[in-house]
Length: 72
Image (cartoon, rainbow, N blue to C red; front, side, top):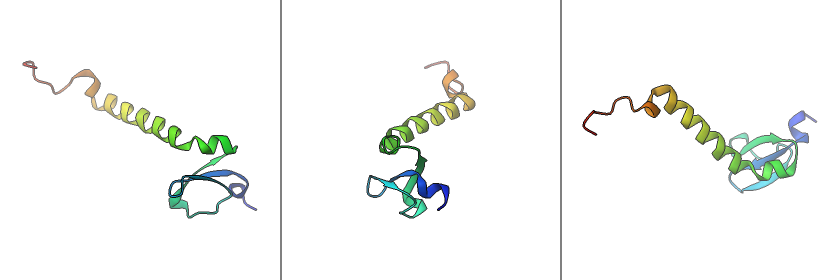
């Protein structure tokens, strides 16, 4: 058994936690050490996406108001 077969995964299609690499890789995220961690995958994905968006905005200077006209 590979290491991923002994972990929990979150299936994005069924919205269910799975033990082992049952579903196609395109449909699952993980691995997670516990079933509870896998169950919270959607929230974790949202947190990471928000953090990445904030980081991208900061790198692009959006947070500093660069590109805004002085009339605004």
